[in-house]
Length: 140
Image (cartoon, rainbow, N blue to C red; front, side):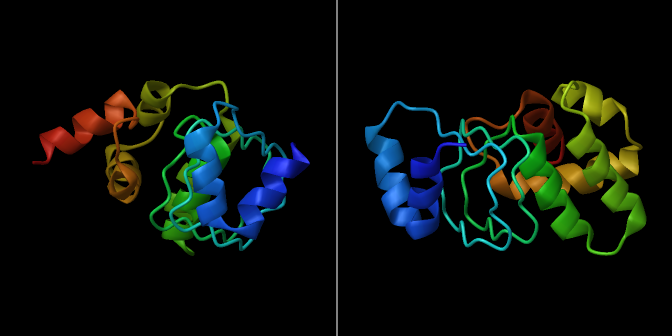
């Protein structure tokens, strides 16, 4: 983890986003303790969040690092609440760093996939994984 990156993000999302616009540096937030942090609207694209503690983080309006299994798993965990079937999808995402989006989509039931993609669709942007974009297009 880069302490400067971590401190900047926790100090102010605006400061973080301004820095992201000016810097080509890839944010390194590996193993960062971000539990319950307010990251509303934060630009997390391309950030390395592997192993970050994200429990309860507020990601409303954030721009996602779609490659971060940790981040995607936390979004799904929060949405699943106490539903064990849906929480299992979040767990699968979390432990499956070696699987691509297509493989993860194929590893769950269609009901689980529809639920997960429905949750993640609200964060769709130009970097959204192809399999999720295609799922969204099928539902229009």
